[in-house]
Length: 462
Image (cartoon, rainbow, N blue to C red; front, side, top):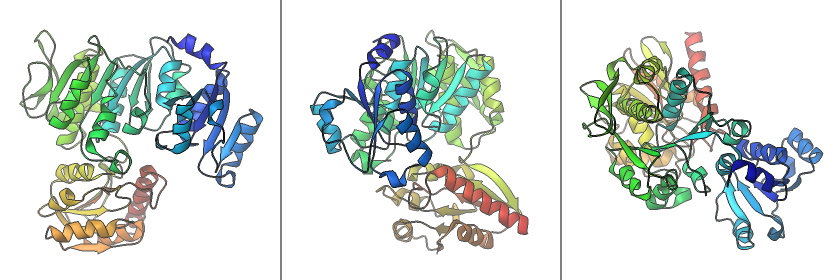
């Protein structure tokens, strides 16, 4: 369905938006702007809602179901779910059974705009890769919005975008669960390791959700995928897109790879294009070489000149909360990796900093197995400082692996002070929690900024 046709159709639709986070609020505004009859639902009751939001919804004639669910789900033509809302809730199933279409904010945005989409998913590296791709697109002079799971709702930018605009989009497995027609010009699956199993239950279900990023693509569109991650690579079979692999470890007959330290791309005719020297990247670690390879492939197969890709890539400083350097004290460097919300991300950060690490970890473990994290402590980490709900689970895994230099704290301030006390010149204090933040903070950004404030405080007091 063409976007204008969909906009016309919305004028006669009753739409329930479920979840009042950023994407839910953005979906409401887009639907109102396009003439839909809008309803809003959230599991929190009205007393916990922002008063300005309540007043705005009342002014706009939006009927609300806060702390309750509608009794009659047959009145709705469509439900738009926020990413945090499980699709298997009883009232959502009842709506679907009654004939309502169930979509998410990403799908809504896609249907409302003529713009082109780049869609980047994977367990780790999404934010860095998406941000870098956005910088390269902007350097190439393209009108670009960097949106999605990175923080800015897709629909907010999409509803006013033109046909030659680009939506460079970080997409999560939660967002992909509710896509139907979504079809990006270029998609990317960066890697696949256990995450969000409390929601998806199995790795197969998690992988199938990720694969939906490319499910509707055709052979004149591209799927950029990690050749070195065989679990991710296997997902390519679920798409008809032209597969463009990238590899840090092997030279390929097409795609992006390392030739010595040089990032190169071999195009579909076999010609090799030099992009940049990996040694000149400002972002550290092997995982960031992989992110740069993926970004280079995405941009090259979107038609951007290799010289522009190379210049923007080597100038890229990285993103907040991802192995972000945030100060030194007495020869000890402090790094904020609050976005390391799973075991694999924390292991990547440990590998990037190599040794002499005092690791601060813990939080909401999302039902993960911490064995792999524990096995990477010895030889790299000198002390483990734990906080948060699942700290005892991490401690148990660490002790089982023979690591005993463990300290438990109750606040971030206490963690940072303890890490500073334990450190010696040449050490690195790393916040890489291997856990979500939800037990103590509303999101990883708030956690990371609190860590940086604590670091600044001890530096200022020194």
